[in-house]
Length: 294
Image (cartoon, helix red, strand yellow):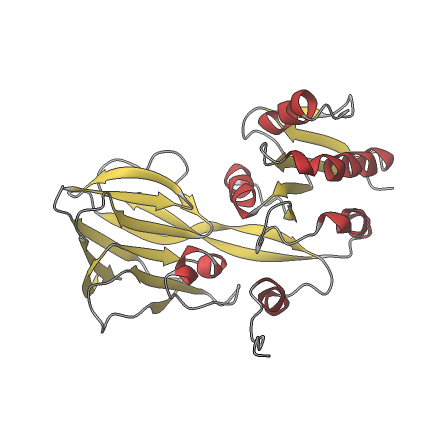
C-alpha cells in the first residue's frame, strides 16, 4: 500500500464535527497514513472534543509543511484559510463540508470513507483554480496578498459612497460611484460577487469579474474580463480612507495608495471525486433552474 501523508485543517468552533473527525482519523490510521494537523485544530480536537489523535501525528505550527493531500473540515471559509496556508506548494485540497452551503467544501461527512478509498485508489481528478495577486504602489498588503475568491474595495463607514477609478491594462475604463467594487475569480463568482448581482463563471474559464457594490447609476453593470488583465484602482473617499478585503481579510487603506490586481503566478489545486461537476454543484447548492411553483 502506498504511504501517503495527509495535512488536516479544520474549523475550531464546530463541536458537531467530532464523530466525522474521529472517523477520518481512524480511517487514515488503518491505512498507515502519515498525519499532520494544524496546531489550532489539534488543540480543539484534543482539549475541547477530547478526541484521541494518533500518537505519531505531527502538529503544524506554521506554513512549513508538505503533504500529498490536504483535508479541510469546515465550510468555505476554512477551505480559503487552508488554501492560504498551502500557498504555492501545489498540494491538492479536498473540502469536507461541516457548515451550510459549501461550494469549495463540497464533500459530505457521510462520504468520508469513500473519499479516502478513492484517494488511495487514485480515483479522482484535480482542478486548477486561479488566484488574484494584490499589490500597492506604496507599501505592501498586510499578510498574504493572494485571493482565491475575490479582492474587494469597500467604503470604510456608513456615510457616503467612494469613487473608484478603474484602468484595464493601462486604459481607462470608468470611475464607479458606489459602496465598493469586487474583482473576483471564477471560484469567487458564486460568493460575495453573486450576492450583489455578478455573473456565475465556470472554473477554468480564464475570466475575472468586475462587480460594483450598490453603484449610484442605473447604467453600471458587471464586466467580465480575461484573466490576463491587469486592473489598476485609484480610490477617492470623503474620509480619505477605504477598506481592502482579500477573501474576507480586511485592512484599512489610505486613498493615496493605488492598487494593482492581476492573476497570481500559481494556482490552487482542488481535489474532485468522480461524478462531481460545477454544474451539478449549482443545481444541488443553489437549486439552479428549479421551478418552485406548485
